[in-house]
Image 1 (cartoon, rainbow, N blue to C red):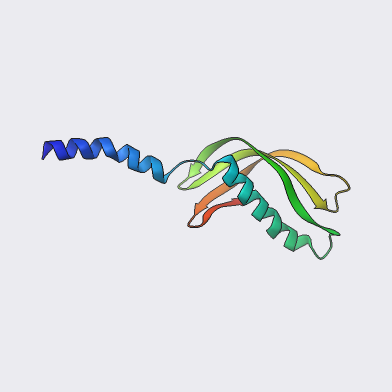
Image 2 (image 1 turned 45 degrees about the vertical axis):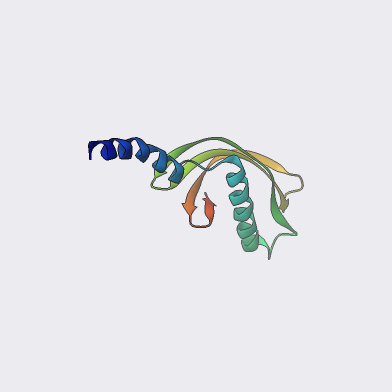
Length: 105
């Protein structure tokens, strides 16, 4: 009985590690691109071009609550009313959902 308990205690951190963790740069890139598509739908009636995230770089994340992280990201955006692509670094919120990560401001 003690052996099973000891093995269970050693395995628990490994199992939990697979279920948690901050989003990868690739996951951030995917969710920011989806965020831009949704944001573009809002401004599409007034913008001559759709918004597109052409470059996304993750700088670091901190756990906010539950499955939500706040990550500092640099995003280069083009389209809309911008005459040239613009690059900004800002914190964004990423929440883990069943299908992946969802970005929000």
